[in-house]
Image (cartoon, rainbow, N blue to C red; front, side, top):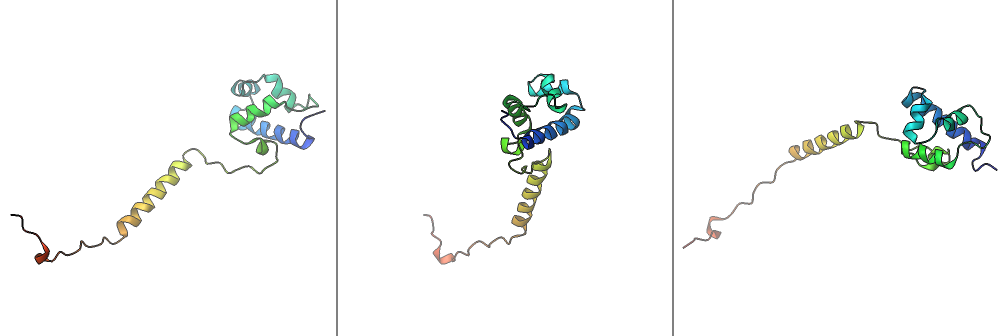
Length: 123
């Protein structure tokens, strides 16, 4: 008995195919090395040679490599939006710039006036 449903196996296969194409230029050996698994594991999944689908270690390796949750990998939860490289820094720069503009545009309160008769003389 397989530990994943056929839909979940297909979800893992699609994700693996996207990673293989996008990050590893289709090179299963490079992907296997990056994930710490054997190239035959990827080959069997992609070519539907194993009726059971991917094993737990393969799915965990995908999780570790992608930063996705197991629910996302298996299609049980929608993928979270991920911040692309440089996007977070750009967001921080915009937020800081906006905050500085607001601070500089705000009126500066005047110093309270001191009544000369209230000043103490030092002796």
